[in-house]
Amino acid sequence: MLTTAHQTRTGQDWSSWADAMSARLALRAQAAEAARTLQPETVDEAAAAGFFGLLAPVTAGGQGATYGEFLDVVRRLGQGCASGAWTLSFLALHAWMLAKFGAEAQAELFKDGAMPLAPAPLAPTGKAEKVDGGYRISGRWEWATGVNHSDWVIVNCLEAGTMISRFCTVRRDAVQVVDVWKVAGMAATGSNVVTADNVFVPEHMTLPASQMAAGHSPGEALHPDSTLSYPLRAALALAAATPALGAAEGAVITFTERMKTKLAAFSGGAKQGDNPTTHLRLGEALASARAARLVWADAIRQLEAEGPNGAQTPVETSVAIRLAGADIVRLANRTIDILAAAAGASSSFLDAPLQRHLRDVQVIRGHVMFDWDRTAVLAGRVAMGQPTTPADLL
Image (cartoon, rainbow, N blue to C red):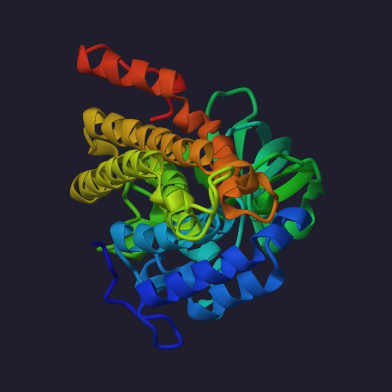
């Protein structure tokens, strides 16, 4: 089991904090889904514990946890609510990304040791025009997870007349938020659209995407012996898959407890948990969830072994981690699907956690990083020694 030796600001070990926070996320999940955003107290509690700085380097005011330690906390949070785990973990991951920027930007972003909170839509769907002292940016970006709780926004832009992309960080009030996130699952992430129209960004608040992606960023020199050199997309694939794993584990827990007391329909009062078919389905789900957990742990091992190599990380490792992320989500979806099919009609009520886990993981499955066919084709192509392309998102 991956646990962290670090402690929260209140002196708890992170595993205990995550388990308690997961229970609170579960209690708040229905209200958060209805509001299409996390409650302020959820974000406040995460900030008070120091969660948003868990992955950020110590020299930036964070805790400098290993990637595995960070993801174990996220997995536990996901057992209560995938939306909550996704949003909180992405805000922490984006603070880590901002630690890759140069010293002048970090003096502003990490002022007084506070963690900057920012969404970071990664697709380069904006444009950046070079001007004196920086860039002027315009565009529309999907999807800005956590924008409702943020001070800053990180967007990716193509430099005018080129195919070179650059991450630009602006204050939250410099962009417009378009409220479009009206979805069947993961609603509480509030992953709305952001737009900008001719917004000036100082040069020091930008970073070439190549430096953000893997190695050689200014922040690595400022924060030696940190995880900042890790390849971004591999790290992102694991971070995004982990709430799905947590949701699958949470669904197993929920189903097991429910079956202990649920009466089977037309059975004369027999408990559904005494039915061998229930045992069979639960056993199948346990095997599927365990497989997802093992794939997850192996991918973390690979990332922590090769990640320090940055841009020199072997393509085979990056593809293996990408495949693992998609496989974790696939197995998580299968786990919850098995349980939902066996749980009975009462599990479909909106206050039943199982149906929320099901919908949330189905939406996670739609993320471009977890397109199973596309990812499996990529893995097979690389295994055959054939080249990758920019569209492979490695």
